Amino acid sequence: MTIAELSPQIQAGKISPVELVTETLARIRRHQPALNAYITVMEESAMEQARQAEREIRTGHYRGPLHGIPYAAKDLFYTRGVATTAGSKILRDFVPDYDATVIERLREAGAILVGKTGLHEFAYGVTNNNPHFGPVHNPWDLARIPGGSSGGSTAALAAGLCTFSLGSDTGGSVRIPASFCGLVGLKPTFGRISRYGVFPLGHTLDHVGHFGLSVADVAAILGVLAGPDPRDDSSANEPPPRLDLSAEPGLKGFRLGVPRNYYFERLEPEAEAAVRAAIQVLRGLGAEMEEVEIQGIEDFTVLSRLILMPEATALHRARLKTRRADFGPDVLALLDQGQFILATDYLDAQRRRRQLVRGLDRLFDRVQAIVTPTTPTTAPKIGETMIKLGGQDEDVRLASTRLVRGLNLAGVPAISVPCGFDSKGLPIGLQIFGRAFDEYAVLRVAHAYEQASEWRKRRPPMAAL
Amino acid sequence: MGRGKRLAGDDTVIPMWKNIAQALGLQIPDDQLEKISPTLDALWTATRRALDRDLSSVEPALTFHADLGSEGEPEP
Image (cartoon, rainbow over all chains, first blue to last red; front, side, top):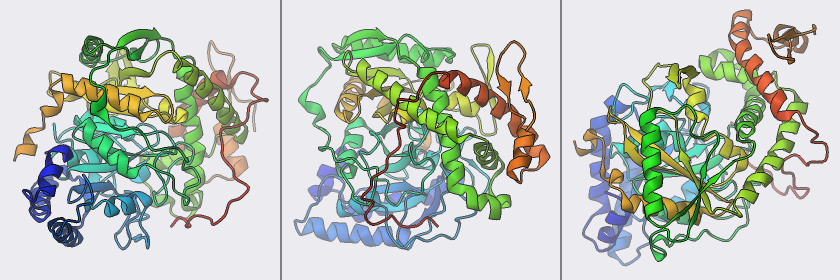
């Protein structure tokens, strides 16, 4: 069930948080062996919080729509007294003595943390094929990756092992697993959600994001997480985002851009067909569609990689010297590559970034949001390293990130919503992005589309077991 | 650090990564350096094209505040 379905019943006392959390923990025990979605399950503290929520609600102290709702957090959010591994062998025994700001805010809202989910080692990859904790499996097909790096959070949510979940997105790590697992995943604007207490990967590219079963759920979570934080230097002092999605039904007069360049190249035909069909639905809802050219989008993508590599390597430089053998091979290779990036190139990339972002911002004078595919394919198989797209062999990592990574450079809000399934029964994602701090436009389009389609009602078979 | 290599049909000169690794004292075993070299070649080529313009008048998109106040918690 969604947050929107659960919360009125919790508030009315018809659903007990204790029963809800008990059932969630039972589902985790049932499906964790097949999915490997969690690194740590917090049974005792979750039950304690559930009992507290029940007492509060019964005595008239209802905190809001997340009160009594069980959620999961990617295991790079600091949790006081609970191991935070970042999916690494190196931090396997690291126990923070404070909570991330987002964990604090969710606790204040009454949400109940049931566990910490698996991720690609140090969030530096898209497969979640983790050499230290094992691969996370996709609930739609256990032989396939859930996408990453926040794949444990999406595997858990899609299989019904929580009601919403937290992730982080440095090069697509919220939107890719949302697409591969058939969920809604939002990467808000850079600075919108505090990163305090979130283990970093690339300081100028990292975003906190989250997953829900519906766009309304994602909006409700954003309402709790968004806001300035004096402990996070990158936090923006912006007014809260508008979130009243039912105020403007349909998209009459909404100006929506469809890129004519880059985004529709080398796609799996079934993914392209689903996205094109979704665009027709949006047109039918009254959106005024305009073909747009996104200047320099190839540069966005390549410079995002160029910037990430030295940022990640600088973060891990000391560990590269002292704990080299404790990194997994793919992450070690990326960290080694980062040692060769020139400082002058890094700074010029950050200069070019500013030019590119200004150009993109001007585009939002013409259109209010832009719609694209999220990924060029559905979920690849675990262990698959190359895929063929448009007659060309392409590295799974580069293919999966090619349509999403550039938006981390821009820092603009972007969402992935389910828009269909391929003939293998795997979900396909639609990406919508908008102007910085205009999460409302992105959520509005996503919500209108979701209401006009049936995709969100489809869950993997194991979610019913 | 060596003269670098030129890709066929391209003016881009690719650095000799092995020489750079030695000069910088990077402790990357030869076999691992060989594995990452094609990626470095491709990234170098792509970024030459992306950065081939005058950017001198543009401020880098990095943030610094003079009033740093209390620093964040140290990383583990």
